[in-house]
Image 1 (cartoon, rainbow over the protein chains, first blue to last red):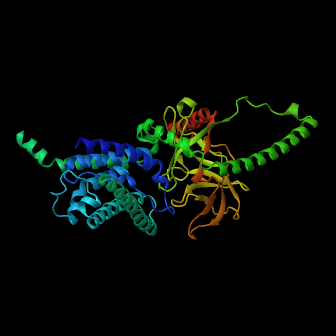
Image 2 (spheres, rainbow over the protein chains, first blue to last red):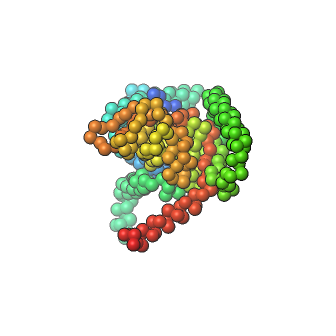
Image 3 (tube, rainbow over the protein chains, first blue to last red):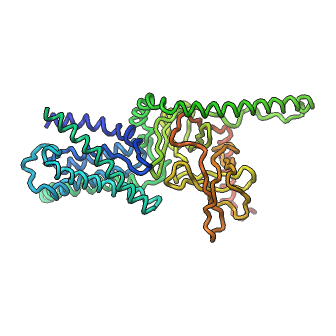
Length: 171
Length: 289
């Protein structure tokens, strides 16, 4: 657990500034934003206490909000996402005994279940984020396009990160 | 008491969730960008330090374009200098110089050069962070321009960094006029395209044609009059409206912002005092007698 805590702290310190400095500028066609920092919420062990998960989710969103000048937007979405994560997980995997203390990855969950889980998380996040942002300029076509494109883009990047991390852990 | 405790423990996940959602919503609905604490913005020490170190690398990326732009601008300024020199010569020859009215001595506008360390164009509310702060004489509500035109207005100031409300942000409306005529309207971003904005509230009898330049009106103390802002591309007015709504192509390229200048108006306090004085007078004496 200590090992995980250190790894998580490092990931936290790395991913939030990376999201602000690098990934927020990798926007494709002015619609698709890669929300790579969501890995911070994905990587938490499923058996972790829900209070801790919610607080960590909120902190990730809050820090990103400071960087991006979007007060409250990411905090709110991250809190809701972290809170509902376990429920979404159980949509696809019924028992979590095998996963005690381990992060959900394609290795621990199986590729198909992990893909579905990841897609649901990312999709939910993008729907919340872009709907809140659309309060100012409502354009339905653009909203749907943003949600779909960002979900796909983020999903691909997160799956790539996952396969990199898993391979490294196996060796 | 024990029961209360047990209740809290049992439902702690909902409590934590509700508290965090409430905090987020409070942040979300506070709205006014001027009233945020500087540590909650990108001008705070945490974010600005990260942005500054990243900027040491990324500031080299657009140098080619910036260089081209500067060369063009330089050429334009040189030709202006030549023509101004000619005019000065003519005036000196005519002996007008003795009769010219002397200025009060303080140049009304000063420019502080700053570097953009963070910038966004794809969000509904875009902000820019620059690497100069109160230690360099920057205050809230100063205008920011770059070599091509208007960029934004300073909202929060840290010691060595400041956050600017970009022109690509609905919190910012800019009073502009058409260069050829004296009619003025209000420029506001259209929300999705970083190269375009709308000029609204332009009187229906205004004469204009696509290609006309839009400049700052100078009616606020923030920007000097006549700074270029954009070019009219077409008319987007609803037939039933009493005002024109024109589509404007912005001259500033917000996707490659590098060096910017913060405009400090030395007469701003004086102007503000006068305007406040007027407001107070009208409050005391609403019918003017």
